[in-house]
Length: 288
Image (cartoon, rainbow, N blue to C red; front, top):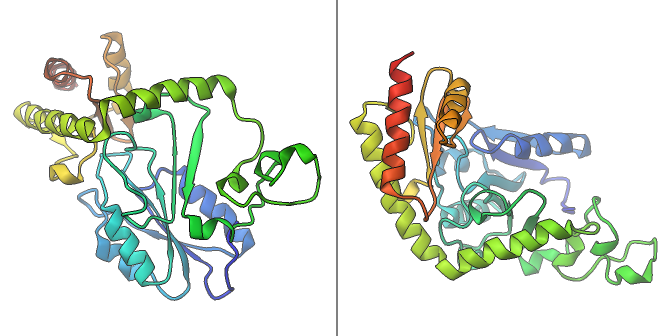
């Protein structure tokens, strides 16, 4: 939906994005986009200078995640915005892997676009996703993927394009009503508890989880400073998929990604649950 001069046609994204996002950008190459992917460092991070080296006068947008899905590495969104804007580029943040666990002030951080969904840490179900777009940008967007809900007057039933003047212009058709009820209930709970309080509890559990994983001499992949760590704690293991299945047999839900198994606690989890999970992982790994 972005109208840009031909001189700005580069999209800078990164290997720490969930694959769907770069795949979407690559699909835009047929419209003239040039996609540049910033590689992940050996320690599982991407530094600000790694992005800055790729940004130039031809860059239209920097597309980056709030949190690396594999290991829980959390990025400094305000710093990403400063780097992008210093080079004349827009910033789009995929917050799916961390929204609801750490405060995000899109205005204070000067974020242009933020996308997420109700699944994961917002405690909802699949089917609800949403986008924040900076007010100054909204009316410059002319989305090709649109529908009647994205028009100024949907109930005029006019088949000509007449985009809404606010964020509604990014809507398409009728939303999934049942998922919307679940989303409203789950996000109300997050607001009731308070995101800052959630972050404090999650940080406590992250410190505890890291300490327990190290005590068990497991291969910790998420050994970050706590300010750069989301709830995800990744452990490198042999045959992560089989380990996930074995944990499920023991009523422990973790997820395998590549060569790691991910523990992903929330504010309602306890230290005892982390102990139990890490102990079972250690037992199963020792049998391999």
